[in-house]
Every structure is written in C-alpha cells, then in structure tokens.
Length: 114
Image (cartoon, rainbow, N blue to C red; front, side):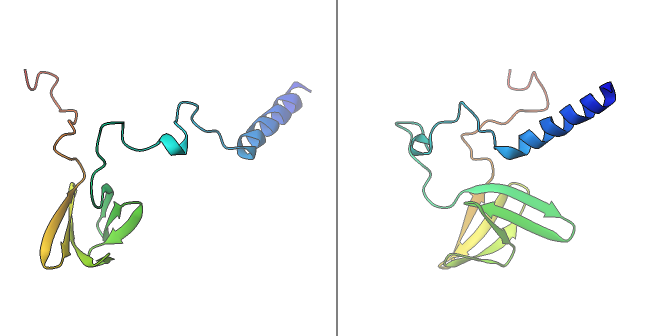
C-alpha cells in the first residue's frame, strides 16, 4: 500500500512541474530589463555564444545562429573562433568578441594579479 501511495505522489508531483513554468522571482519585469541606468548599451551586434565541433562552427549573434560563410545583415561571417567572430561588412572586417575587454574572467591561479 505504501509503495502505491509513493508512486502516486511521485506521478502527481512530476506532472505538476510541467503544468506551469516557474519564473525567477528576482528577475525584473520586461520593461526594466536592459542596461543599468547610466550605462550605455553596446552599439551594433553582440556575440552571445560560440559552438565549435569537428564538423561545424556556429555563433549566436543577437539571438540568431550563424555559421561561417553565412550572410549577416549586409555582410558575411568570415571566421568563428573560440572567443570571437569576424564579419566583413562594406569591405571592412569587424571582430565581435565573446569576452569584452571590460569583463574580467576568473583565472586559473588564485594568486594571479597580486
């Protein structure tokens, strides 16, 4: 009897997780999302993610996926590396960096920089 009750409880509990999506209670409303007051939003495209596999290279720029050679607006994606994407527009190459210069990343050594 107790196994059946536990099984029934598990089914009901797991089914209820699919009924309504949970949202982050600390996330600001959509109107308030974006840069912090006083900070300027970066102009132009933003590189969000890079996927490099043996058979393909994909970059996510402004929420859209692009592969090498794909058309990007009025330009073309030339190269995708681990940390940047190079786009040629109007005869000029523009590099989109995954980690902008003003963002500090964790280093391998805790004593580094001291």
